[in-house]
Amino acid sequence: MNTTAEPSASLSFRTSTTEAALYSSSVVSFSSALCSVSGLMSHSKTVLPSPLPSESDLGFRILFMNNPQSMWVFDLKTLFFLEVNAAAVEHYGYSRDEFLRMRLADIRPQEDVPRLLEEIARVSAGIQHSGDWQHLLKDGRSIDVESVSHNIVFAGREAQLVVVRDITRQKDAERALKQAERKYRLIFEEAVVGMFQSTPEGRYTTVNPALAKMLGYDSPQELLTTITDISRQIYVDPHSREELKSLAKENRVAINFECQAYRKDGSKMWLSANVRAVTNDGVIVGYEGMNEDITQRKLLEDQLRQAQKMEAVGQLAGGVAHDFNNELCVITGYSDLFQMDLPPGNRPHKYAVEIAKAGRRAAALTRQLLAFSRKQVIQPVVLDLNAATAELEKMLRRLLGEHIEITFKRSSGLGQVKMDPGQVEQVLMNLAVNSRDAMPHGGKLCIETANVELDETYARQNAFVTPGSYVMLSVSDTGCGMDKNTQRHIFEPFFTTKAQGKGTGLGLSTVYGIAKQYRVHHRLQRSGKRNDLHSLPATAERDRQASRTSTGS
Ligand SMILES: Nc1ncnc2c1ncn2[C@@H]1O[C@H](COP(=O)(O)OP(=O)(O)OP(=O)(O)O)[C@@H](O)[C@H]1O
Ligand SMILES: [Mg+2]
View 1 (cartoon, rainbow, N blue to C red):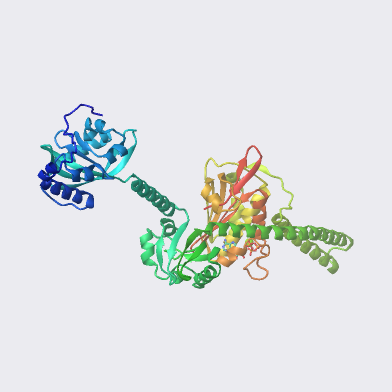
View 2: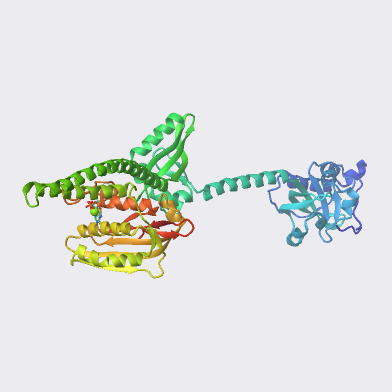
């Protein structure tokens, strides 16, 4: 603070009537200046500098000294305060004497001084609305002020009369409001769930970026302009919105309403909506709420339901197969004994042979059911899937026939897996035979091995998968592929699309059972007409001596 003493034009107010009469013209001009200044600060009017009224001016004393607004006069050249009123003394905490030893810059924060000097330099005749500033009080606090200044001549000096209004509260309120607005805007803008407001007729009035992104639009603006009828353009079933609206009308809110919606590209997704009816005098004027993408959850729920179903079927099939197998042992055993007692070549002997054959075929079937229900006795060993597939190559070529081209893509440095070699053969055979049947006029079969990483994203999309390193065995063909309905049932025992006597429907359920036995992740992929069936990636878990496998393309 500058405390250099500067001679100030100290005012003494005398009330001599003669002197008052002498300065009456000055009183009028000063009073009018004050009126324009305090009249309303925002009015900017150019007037000529007014001479300061006399020291004895009663009007000045009343208007200046007793004005409830802080006021002062400062020297335009030196910036020293020349006079301050009682309100300024009280508000700022400096005594009048202290004020008169200070310059204007002393009540400004340091960083404001250059702007202050610029403003002073720009000052020309007339009233300047000098805008919003920050002032420092004696106790160090800073306040927000709005000031209006008026050029005057004070004791022969060019000076400015300043009226100051403390707007700290107003500014604080504005700041708080802005902050609150920003906070709520941020919640809206940055929310991970889609938020919207819509009209009863079905137009969005507000949408946040998350909703636009969820529905595949580039921006909220694009969503707002594209969608003119939510019922038809967003909801797969147009009645969904009506249902949602009537729920919101009845209960004021609709909670966790699940339905299917279209993305911009026409693909379908599942969403959960929480919606509130907005009313005005009891009349619904709109809706607002949140939409959450639950497609992934629905997918996992589906997978879980399927797994539970397979578990139940597996238990049933396993139980029946086990008991049935015992009965078959009795049938084949007795028919073998029967054959021994009959002379070979005669008719009853031939019948007994056929009974034994049928019994063995039936036993093979029950073995498959036992594999599905994971009740098969297995002897897992650590093996290399590249070597295992090489051993089977010859047999596969013979099995598939010349019209099918088989290619092997064996990845080097392949991790080992712990499996029963007989089951690896069973899986490959079942898949290869299916491919053959899907390509009656020829095609290509590809058997591939690779080390793959199944990441968090993959694990999120596929139930029961732990992210990590896996060994993949993939079998794909260029056959007819499967429709959605077939895909839904392929792992169920006895599900077949083949003609009677051609297929038992146990091939893929066996693969499924084996995969589950080794905690292998099995995935079926479909790309256009091409049907890729990938199975059995497995990785040796050294510590637990168990293996995890997965299928992937
Ligand atoms: N590679 C494939 N291409 C097209 N469809 C397939 C393929 N693999 C399986 N399918 C379909 O899945 C169904 C079930 O296959 P699965 O192997 O379980 O039984 P199946 O082949 O019909 O009979 P099984 O294997 O017991 O003789 C098949 O009937 C077929 O419709
Ligand atoms: Mg089959």
